[in-house]
Image (tube, rainbow, N blue to C red; front, top):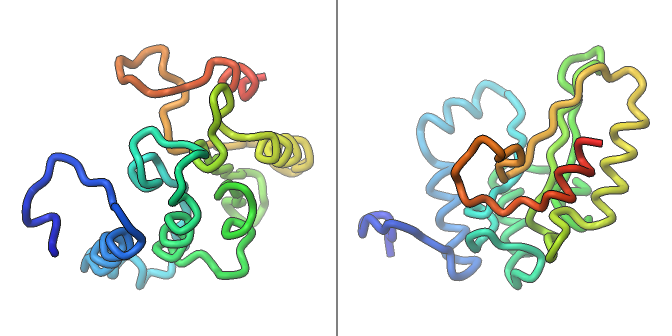
Amino acid sequence: SDVYKRQPSMWLPSSPKVAAKKFSVAKQDPFYQEFLQTGTPVVGIWDDHDFGNNDGGGAFEGKEWMRQLWLDFIDEPLSSPRRTRSGMYESYYLGRQRRVKLILLDSRYDRQKGDMFGQEQWDWLENELTNSPETKVFLIALGVQFIVEDRTLPETVYPEDRDRLYN
C-alpha cells in the first residue's frame, strides 16, 4: 500500500520489501532524476531514519539488508568496500589536487553501548587522517549531530567518542 497517503507522523520500514519501495519512490522523484542526469556523484551516509530504527545501532537485525538497499539507492558500485566491511564509512577526495578529503563515518552499523563506531572503523579513520600527506582539510560527516553542546536535541552522543575524535 502507499503508506505516505495515510500521512503518518512517523514511518519505520518493517521489511526489505517495504524499505525498497520507499527508496524506489524517492529515487523516481523528477527533481532527483534531473539531478542524476548532471553526472554529479551522489555520496552520503545514513542516519537513524535511513538505518531502519530510531537511534538504532549494531543490534538491529535488519542492518545488512537495509545497508544494501541504501547503497543501491545512491548507486554505490557492487564492488565497493562499503557493501562488505563492518559499516558504510568511506572517504572521498574533493578536487583533483587531493587537498580536501570528505570522510563519512557510520555511527549506526557497529554502534554498541559506549562506542559509536567500533574498533575497525576507528583504525580506518586513524589511517585516513595520518596517511593523507597531500590533504590540507578534512571534512568529517556522520548521520548524527556530533557537536551538540549548543543544542537541545536529544541526540545520543558518546562523550568519549567525541573526545577521541577531537584528539
